[in-house]
Image (tube, rainbow, N blue to C red; front, side, top):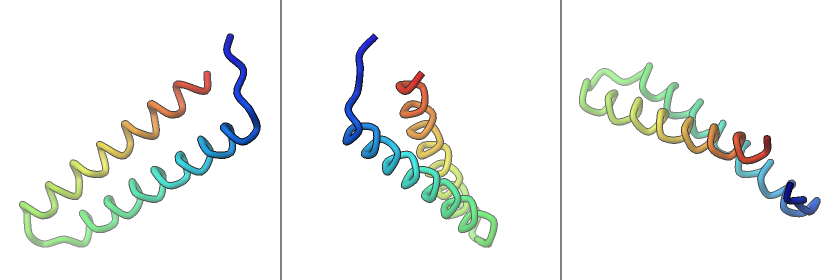
Length: 61
């Protein structure tokens, strides 16, 4: 198993926090949007950032 440094772990934590925030923002914007095309784009962005978060998390296991 590969060991990661404290600095790398901190960077991963920061990235995960940013992705989490982006998911929340995109979902909020989608829920407030009345334009269906724009709402769909926000939902897709939320899904993409959720996948990024999940990928980062899976690399920590």
